[in-house]
Image (tube, rainbow, N blue to C red; front, side, top):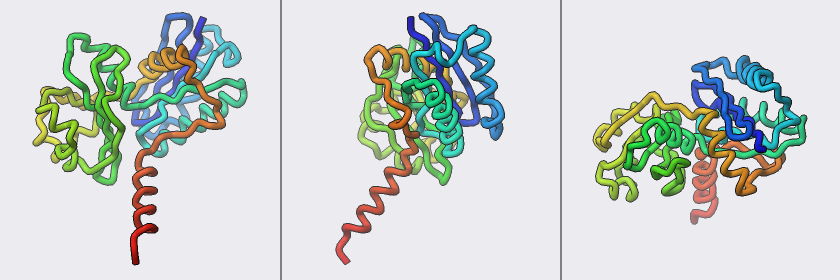
Length: 235
């Protein structure tokens, strides 16, 4: 009897999903620059349709990033308010992993690894590589880098162009040289895929306190590493 609500606003899309005892309902909208106006009403709508309240839930899942800084903060703020108010644990889920899961669900015949990429602005992309399990598993760490550097990554070179590229990050011209088997730009993180991953994570007891929940920007960690190198470099 698992009840989990999921939210995501990490890209131009905005979505919520509700999983109740094996059944999932969801709402998805392309809502660029209106996440603050849409996310909470969408939560109210999906709960009302299921005759469910926050206190009926077991946990709240959310797209923890990477993604738009503003979108991640908006989602995090809403999740904090809901989780604190109802005293619920949370489940942070990778937005790139959710994208891969969504593609796998729609293309079950695919047997090639999936490289999900989002536009990180500043002429960079967020990317992660995933296998073809129904709940796509990461084949390495998630990264942020210049598109031109992607072809230099060992794990990409080893694939010898035998992979599927998904996500808006693939619009950069510098990525054309990689030439994967297929490029699908119109793929967004969706709450329905986040909630599928969250149900599995909940069964593994991976929920955390909202006090410990943070968005994952990726770029923060890169900046921190650069600052550390500057501080430790000999003068």
